[in-house]
Length: 212
Image (cartoon, rainbow, N blue to C red; front, top):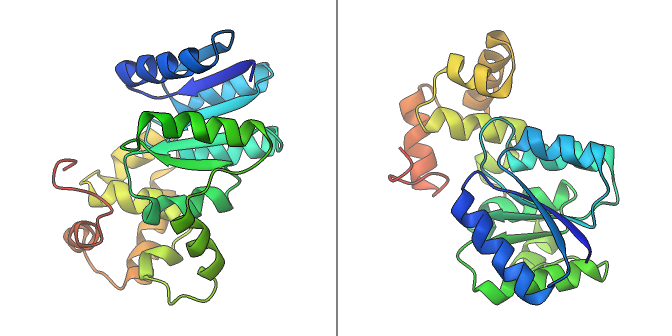
């Protein structure tokens, strides 16, 4: 493991992760960025052995950055970090091409375990997620699990109280495009208002009261 690009919008988290990685890999070169746009730019400009990216960042999310990275450099391994429970995002990011998904509340040595497995060309998957991946085609899916990755991201932003204009600005998309996504989301979830979206998201632990 020679060169790692680390993306997280919180500097104190980046510093903590860098310290953990340096303790295990003293000679590793680590470059840090604070958002998805900068991450994608660095991936385009330079060669890396591993990408470690937060899921929630300003502008492009880690999930959207992941999808773009896999188009640019399909074989570059990406480890996604998130505060969200595995059952909410792990299957999504793994199916999008991630080499692993790690909850930020995991023990610090789990990060090293994940990096070690990925450096061997393997995926980092917990037993619970492995089982979920095996049965994902057979389970009766919850309505939000039928949303595309982009729809899911916009659904979460709407549930957090963001306006269509704010979402359009943050994702660099047209207002009409966001409005179309909103209509599709409402139809798929069988909901009518943004308040309904928020209640649904809270009840399924997609957002928390703290985030609102």
